[in-house]
Image: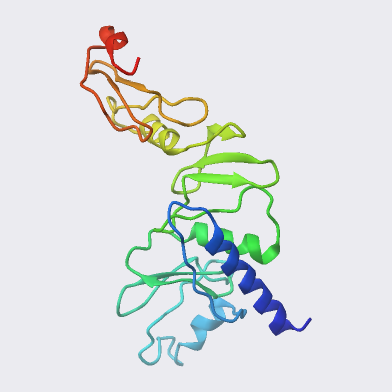
Length: 226
């Protein structure tokens, strides 16, 4: 199989797998023909003899120390950010809602190499990590923070939801001393009764939203969801 057909097959696999992923919302990643460039060489090619950027370039590449492309790039005039692979392939088109590029790049590398050890890297619509991830090798579900940190207390085959664990972890690591910390079942779902120390208890639905009046903690057993 020639290089062109191999590249086409890789891109097709990435597109199909991304589109069929069961996400909070479908994440679309445009990609052109695979090519390989060195970021440092690309940057130097834009400079004139004095070392200044020549001409009116719309994109001045940002490079990592090893000469590869940084995952997040920005258009010079519009300020729009976009994601690229290490060798400069555009993974996410320029846009204003872009928060991070680590998830798209890691996902691209998974499909590019065929190494699916760990999880596949599902991304949200802002391209941060989706809260619920799946490991196809162990059939285990993982709960992640937006930056990709695994919530170890809520990872395993029993996990069915991750909204509560993420909110719990945010509260646990918050510098605010009296922040409300949700109570989660071992499977990651919200407990029917939620309590905030010193402020009372209430009934919650599957999304953790309050659906009853607040009673003192000593009267939690009188809540209708008890």
